[in-house]
Amino acid sequence: MKIRKDRVKIITLGCSKNLVDSEHIMAHLKTGNVEIVDEDRKADTVIINTCGFIESAKEESINTILSAVENKEKGRIKNVFVAGCLSERYKQELEKEIPEVDSYFGATSEKKTVMGILNTLGVDYRKNLIGERVVTSPKHYAYLKISEGCDNPCSFCAIPIMRGGHVSVPMKNILTEAEKLAEKGVKELVIIGQDTTYWGLDRNGKREVAKVLNKLSEIDGIKWIRLMYAYPSRFPDDLIEAIRDNDKICKYIDIPVQHVSDSVLKAMRRGITKRRQIELLERLRREIPGIAIRTTMLVGHPGEGEEEFNELLDFVKDFRFDRLGVFTYSEEEGTHAAGMKDEISLKTKNMRQKKILDAQRKISEENNRSMIGKSIEVLIERKENDYYVGRSEKDAPEIDQEVYVSGGVGIKAGEFYKVRIHDFEEFDLFGEKEN
Image (tube, rainbow, N blue to C red; front, side):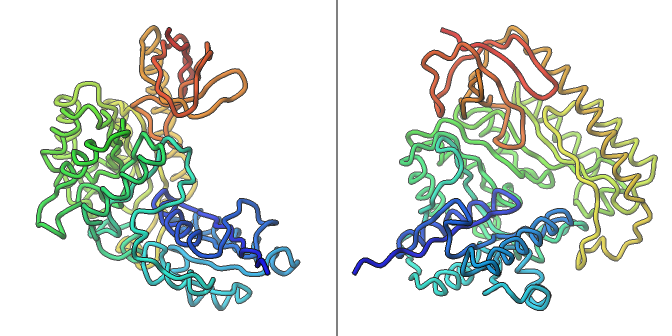
């Protein structure tokens, strides 16, 4: 008798690091008698890989769990499993408040969680699956996680509580996974970790992320290597050389500044001063011509008065980051900042966020205007109405701007093309494929 496979849907919430964890779990499930499906109505079991980073992410995770439980109660699915950061941090509370969930597991980066999920579904954990993933992003790019957890003591961040201390993924495993991704047709590797510049310190006593990037560049088929989450404190010098000298490493870096006021940086426990931070940013621009610098700011942290905020706003206007995101501070229990008095209203935090974003919008518009008439290389991602849509070397997937390309005879998703820019918007460019 032919037995129908169990059908499982995995819902991934939060960051790209969670996505990688889910993709590894999918690979294990597929080796068992399990079918991965995209729709709830086709699934027997729904696994929710949750996020617990900030309040809005927690709310999204809770709402997703409640929706799945409702589908279970209506008989649309049989089982609901919850894993990930929210479950790692609040397992007891969740079990009490939402007992309809069949099983709660911890962080999906942990072997015990993966094994727990697999065992519950009757699938054996296989050690020979190192590096195997079911890639759910467009086939031409993939995220590559080189570390777990974080050792930095940032006052506002609960990641160490949920994910533990920093652990570098062994070089051999990183290269094996990257080679398998290249065999699947991946052309761009987006390097992620909670602090990518920390790689190697726990293994060899040295920060060796540059070595990782250079080794990855030797893999056939990989054309772009993009570095994300590069912590500014104790930034390794040889990383600058690698980005500058290796043609496969994108002239792009994501470096979360968070703030520039010395008093706020101290309160945030960032381990760096305004002067050292600006010196690093200026050095990146000076020594890597044409580099695009993305950053993240946090406004409304306890101790940020009007003077400190205006200092940050003036810096954003003066330095003119290529790409920028802004979060508002929210208290996370168990963090150092939770013990500080938060006297800043939500209205003020939102107003400060808007002022930073308005300044960046103007900068982005001016930067994009300067691109008129220039030719750039674009990796095409998809077709949208009359345009083919892609990204330049200066843009990471999902978070940065896109390039809309016309004149699309023979254009294919996943391929690189030279595009001449002829128009722009605040956060997008428009161009035509060159012959």
